[in-house]
Image 1 (tube, rainbow, N blue to C red):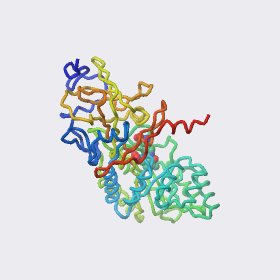
Image 2: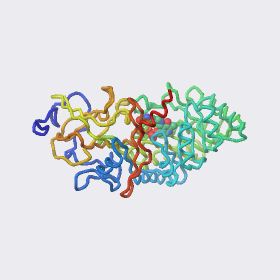
Image 3: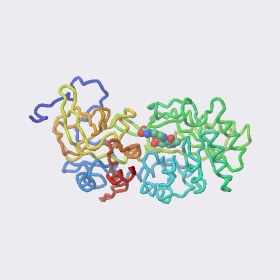
Image 4: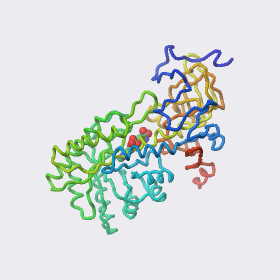
Amino acid sequence: MSRSAHPAGPRHGDVLPEGHYTPPPSDLNSLDPRVWAQTVERTAEGALSVGGVDVRRLAEEFGTPAYVMDENDFRARCRAWREAFGPDADVFYAGKAFLSRAVVRWLHEEGLNLDVCSGGELATALAAGMPPERIALHGNNKSMEEITRAVEAGVGRIVVDSFQEIARVAHVARRLGRRQPVQIRVTVGVEAHTHEFIATAHEDQKFGLALAGGQAAEAVRRVLGLESLELTGIHSHIGSQIFDMAGFEVSARRVVGLLTEVRDEHGVELPEIDLGGGLGIAYTSEDDPREPHEIAKALGDIVTRECEAAGLAVPRLSVEPGRAIVGPTAFTLYEVGTVKELEGLRTYVSVDGGMSDNIRTALYDAEYSVTLASRASDAEPMLSRVVGKHCESGDIVVRDAFLPADLAPGDLLAVPATGAYCRSMASNYNHALRPPVIAVRDGEARTIVRRETEEDLLRLDVG
Ligand code: LLP
């Protein structure tokens, strides 16, 4: 009995089981340009192509699962951010979203700077030739080794996050005979409207030094008193996957407030402020993200207004988008292994990856969309849950999605907007082999991060 003849599970228009559904598009084959990389399209044959390359060819040549990244889209987004902020601001790409040598080269060529938050990210940035003065080092517990490597390399900025770290960076810089530029990470006390685990500006959490209660002002005193540190500015990052500009505006206002206090107390005008990253992207058609030029205008206006009111020279602004640059540029390509219909509930579609290549659904209840990628179909929409092959029922890639009812093993599915925080948070759970990242551009596809092998796993296992 074919599923299309006897569709199991609810259809669009039925009373659906509990959950949050992005309504099925009127045509399941259509692609919403907000969630797909720029060059993705459905060809006349019905399959998706990206950068002029058919996904069936990608699956054949590189295997599945695979992250497929649209290089031209990545570069275009870099340029859009650079142009939106202009020559008086700096855009630091947040490497934690996804970092590889190729990405570092693209950033370099497109005139972006790079925020790294670990020795590993720093090593990747340096190995790929990012000029050290365009690198900022972050982290709430940088090791002495990481600090030493960063100061030795001559990174342009270390963002200090605690009193202990101020002393550590000062010590390392003194020992190496350097004067290290630093910014102080502050918590401005705003509740960003996002998942608790990715909100970082309320006071009860591990990052930064609070403006309220004077910790941040005390940090300024300490840094200014240390010869081997050069205090260049104040840093605030309020959280991630945020759509509402209000939190950024409060943050900008409070950071400028601290600059004013610093001027009044020390007679020093700090030349920089960094308002962090965190701008949301569209994972489904229901998300409506702001464009870089709107963000640049909103932030630029508020900083200028507040500085003018306080009689301060407008400092050089920087921002640190990660997700907003790389997120939409990639999709994950999976092959369907099994299709299991649960009468009256939904259909479980198992793919050849799962929580090891995308932990975001399990960790943050993230919502994704999905499409049949290897062919078009005009079958009925079927309420589906796309799950992985791991030994947990929470191993969900897309919680609720409509897929065509004639879906079958061997079909390819593509989950868009997986460029950020998917490969970079991938794990070897169940000894899964982490998928490759394939960059596609102008009709050509190449591996930029190769697929892990069983030999890679066994190489670490030295017992
Ligand atoms: N700057 C700082 C200091 C950060 O901590 C972060 C992200 C960013 C910039 C970049 O934020 P973005 O523009 O990418 O939102 N794993 C979570 C996100 C954690 C973000 C951590 N910090 C997720 O998958 O949603």
